[in-house]
Image 1 (cartoon, rainbow, N blue to C red):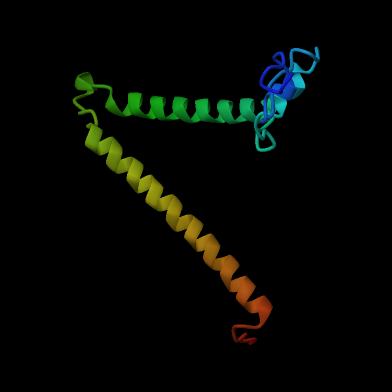
Image 2: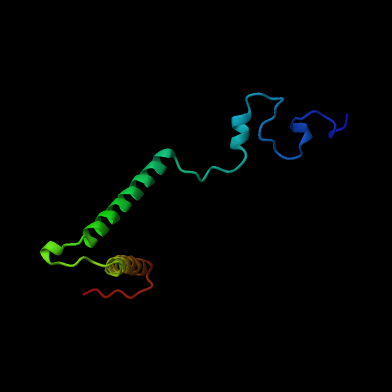
Amino acid sequence: MTKYQSSIGSEFYTQKVVADPKTPGVAKESRENMHDTSHAGSMDDIDAHYRQYRRCVDAFEEIISESTEPYDILSEKRLTGEDVHKAFMEAIKAQQAWHQAELNVLNDLRALSTGNREVYLD
């Protein structure tokens, strides 16, 4: 009997088999060997990420809702979509400026620590 005439089993295939019908109980191990899962996070990490994501969505939803409610009774006009977007972009720019200032402090500290910059002591 040649390899092409043999019954279905792992010896018939030249590549890794998901589950060999001749060897019961290896299906789970075979599935785990199909692809690399070392990069996958734990369920706790995934749940924490999802909760954080939902808090972000809820915060955005609340801000948008509060900002676009019509306040005709108080003679105040609601914000437009353009206004909300402009405010969002301004907030992003403020965060970028803050983080850049923090990064500048760290860069200065590193430069001072490695002796690549003159230190003026009074």
